[in-house]
Length: 175
Length: 213
Image (cartoon, each protein chain N blue to C red):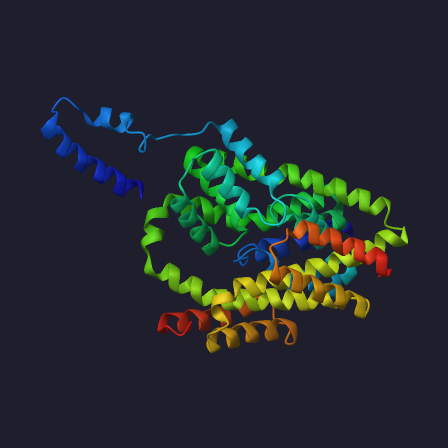
C-alpha cells in the first residue's frame, strides 16, 4: 500500500476517534493497536508500547504519542496529520462549550452523563493495558510491571523516575 | 459565575450609592480588585501554555493549576476546578481542552489556536528529537532492553491511572460490571470503541440516572 494511502486512512481513523476520546486518548489504545499493529502491520506491539513510553518520558500533554505513531507512518507530515485529526472534534467542541459555559455548568445532565461514562472509560483503559501486555516478551516484563504498579499504588513517586528506573531494570535484566 | 458576580456587584452598588451617591458603576467595576476584567495579551497567552507544555512531565493538570492559578492568577482555584470538569465532559485531553477554553475566552478562535500550538508545539519537537535519538541507537541491544523496561513501566502506569480513575466506582457492583463489560467487548469481541461507547455508555447513563452508579 502506498504511503499516501496510509496517511489518508490514518487521518480518517483519528478524525473519527477524535469524537470519542472522552477521558483522554488512552481508552483509544485498543482501536489504535488494531490499526497500526493488527490490520496494517506498521509496527510491532513492543514498538507501539515503546512509543507510548517514550512520550511519557518527554514533556507535554499525553496526546503526543499519537503524533509519534503518525511520524512513523509518514514522517513530519504524518505527525502533523495525526495531531490535527485527533484534535479536530475536541477543539471545535471546546470553542462552542466556552461560549455556553455558564449554561452547561448548571445543566443537571452533565453530572449524570459523566458518572455514567466513567466506568466505560475505565474499562477501555484497562483493555488498552491488556493489549499492551501482549508485547511483554517474558516473565521479566511482567515482574517489572508488577513492581512498578505496586510502587505507583503505594507512593507518590513521579512517573518520570519510575520510567527511568524501568529503563535501568530493562538493561540490568537484559529484557 | 461572572454573571452572578456582576449581579451581586450591581446590588452592592445600589446599597453603596445610598451612602455615596457619587460612586458610579464604572468606578466600582474598575476600582474593585476582584472584579477587574483582566485580559492577558496574545503573547502572554501563548507563553503561558508553552510553559505548561514544556514543564508538564507525566500529566499536565498539576502544572496547569500551578501556572494559571498560582503564578498568573488568571482564575481562582474554584473556577479552575469548574473548567476542568467541563473539559472532562468534552473529548480530548483535559489540559489541551483547557488551553482551547482559556484561549477562546480571551481572544476567540485565534486565541484558542495560539494556546493549542503553545501547549503542543515545543513538546512535539522535543519528542521527535528524542525519537530520532532512540532510532539512531535502536540497534544497540541495551537500548532495546531499556525500551522494553520502559514499556513495561508505562503499561503499569496506565493501569494505575485506570485504577485511580475508577476509584469511587469499585465499591458499586454496577460500575464494576459495566467497566468489565466494556473491557471484555473491546478485548475479546474486538468491538470498535464507538460501539462500546454507544452501548455501554447508554447503559451507564441510564444506571447513573437511576442512581445506581
